[in-house]
Length: 260
Image (cartoon, rainbow, N blue to C red; front, side, top):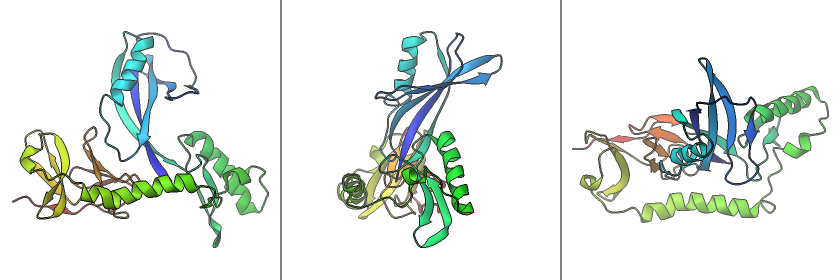
């Protein structure tokens, strides 16, 4: 699987909104719902998704959503912004069932492809039936052991290429720039004594330095200037600018360097 990041706005449209949840069927995909906010309802608009680990910009994410909302609600006001991540399977269908052919009584439910509320209920029913030894007529669709290297060779090749680039290519092509060239409130990976070092400068110019190697499986991290985090393009792990782990599958913090 891989991780996908989506962006969300909480918007006061200054109008009365219809109830319900909606999603458009074409690209780019947007989803719409409402949330109670005092004596009114906010529009919750989500979209602008991308594979986790690529460095997005405000223009490509939150601004894109806001511009879309302004087309239909010109007087609207954005009150909240946030982003979230989801596990995506290779064929975009959840993995539900046995976690391995070697363990008959251990189960998994993941890869919900942003449909967690629906898919988690499906998973609960399928796994319940497996535990009780009952046949579930839908379980074959979500078979967690269905991945076959030949059948899924195109997607596997794409994922393998991304992981390879993170291990090899990005390490070779790291720019030889100095700390002084990094602007305040920005981050980058530089070379110091032939060692890759992740640098973040806060708004006052204070420098934070970390080892930009993911503690999960060793992929090279990328700087996300939108959220001020170090993100893993391989499996979606995330760390704050001080190197503290804030998102799995990694659970260890990054090594921190002192700048003399």
